[in-house]
Amino acid sequence: MDAILDTLSSLFTMEIYDGKSFSDYLTFDFLIGFAGNLIGAIFILIIGFIIAGIMNRRVRRIGENHANLDNTLFNFLGNIARYTILAFTTLFVLNTFGVQTTSIIAVIGAAGLAIGLALQGTLSNVAAGVMIILFRPLKIGDFVEVNGVMGTVKEITLNYTEIADVGNVMVVVPNSEVWGNTIKNFSGYDTRRAEWTFGVGYGANLAKAERVIRDTISADERSLTDPEPFIQVNNLNSSSVDFLVRFWCNADVYFQYQADMKRKVKEALDENEIDIPFPTRTMVYNDPIPFIRPDEQDQVAAE
Image (cartoon, rainbow, N blue to C red; front, side, top):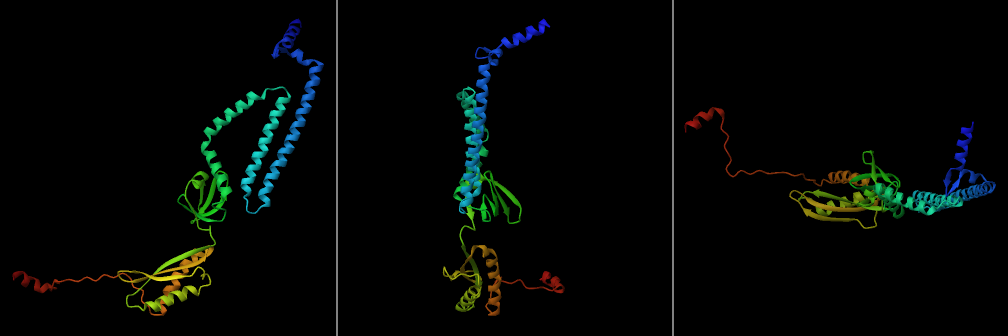
């Protein structure tokens, strides 16, 4: 029994922190002070969480209330604001209990630097994602070509951009490769220029051929008159006279429009008996080799 009491006595008198033993911390004044600090810390935490939530919602609401702003960016900024306020709240709580926060800030800074170096690839994707969302070179639903991938943008996050290619295969491109490469956005403008080359025979009436091509394409409701269409003989090919034809249409119908006009113009030229030539080759022999029947081969050989 005495040994147990001696052990407990030594535990209570053993130095714990700043030259004070456990028994020094069990005084009434210390308990009162600790209770006051605990209540103050809880109050600071509650206020911190409330302010962090309010700031998060306010930043997110900026993106929701403005149609030209992207919600993804403001959700990200809202989270940054929330966690920043909570980080400062934690430092205030620790300071309430007398903890020196200077060294903690230094440790956090060093840890943040190490994490940043280890995750520099991921952080570069996040930075590129912020730039994409902020400057909007592409958006969801656009038909684009990025880093050799052509397709429709399905999703833009802070880390990657998801594209459904022309075969409806999901392609995930890191944002650093999107922002760091040339972006060809086929949906960037409302209208596009379609271009064709139609060849007719050298014996064809060029004025009539031009009129048939112009009337056929102009009759389609998808063809725009502004800017003005362009039709002109562009090349005297080896077997045809080529017309260069340019019409404008809305961007969302471009591919089907371009394909449809090829067939319509071909059918219209056929109906008007305008020849559409195909490559031919004429072979001329200056000294043709005579044909020798099998029954004459022995006689020719003897001669």
